Length: 405
Ligand code: PMP
Image 1 (cartoon, rainbow, N blue to C red):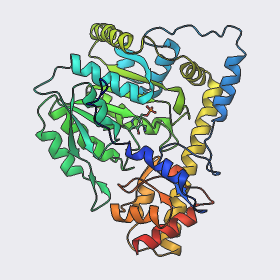
Image 2: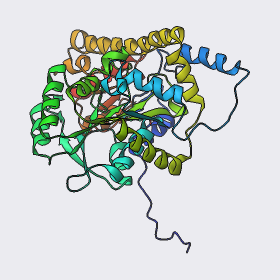
Image 3: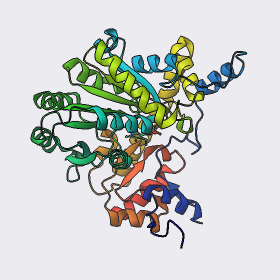
Image 4: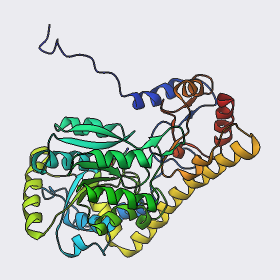
């Protein structure tokens, strides 16, 4: 027996199994709605025109090299990324008390943010971090990996297919003071259910009342509504209200740079002195974890955000993606309600936002979608709207209609 004879076999990642089953399915009509990546109307991955343009520009730069970046990343990138998400009006930015470091996309920002908190946060009792029920599957693993215990707070109500605001607020008020609360800045994954501005106000009230710390995860800025500012409104509002926070930022979805791993972590500090100390510790963490972050994607994003013409083009590309998804929501709603008269209410298809939609289908119904309809989706009833297009939406609606009847 080998030295790892005692290692148990881990279960396969349930989401990543679905594309494998989809590929192996010989059916002529089949749809894969399981994976959270944008697809164009032909069902293909989309390289943003602005990214192509910036890549050509970068390759033609005679000064291009492949040296190491600084430990905390490319400064032109991190400062532009901070302004993009917090806005130029951010008090914390104006007062130079934001620590921004480059991370391995949003996952890396979550990881380094959690690791930093596990070492340095002023914990009041056990190292618990509150996450929405449900949340992105990786949140739990990321927290557990750094010795933090994830605790669920109510978020989604299956009965109404909407936000369980009262339950969420009660949980926030019942948590010990100075608890760390993970919030999705926009386009909640997996439900697609976001609080309204009025609901965010109440959430901020509860956070302030209990002196909670906001751990904002923002993986879809711009991708949700098509507008970078609108999708950052909740976290900007929290800053204005004085809720202490950090922000995890990803450029995977809004720039289509999934594989380049470009992201940032922003820690808003009380003052400049605190920021200097926090920066020094984050630098030590980053050094031990990855030495220094990858250069390619950060160079692209620095160029795209800092060059006014490229920035304009990027905003247009973001709109192209967001609007295609929003139009899929409208078409799906129309086919279900006006043509097929599918039983049940389907308003949530239109009110939900971002890449995902919680259809409200139960595990049994999902099983039928896959086995009878060859429509692949996660067992919680989540579909990636980006997998729908003008060629397959009718087939999807008809399959859904048959399954719920
Ligand atoms: N947070 C949430 C809520 C997400 O949905 C995702 C992407 N699935 C991420 C973080 C991180 O993605 P990435 O590491 O590719 O930026």
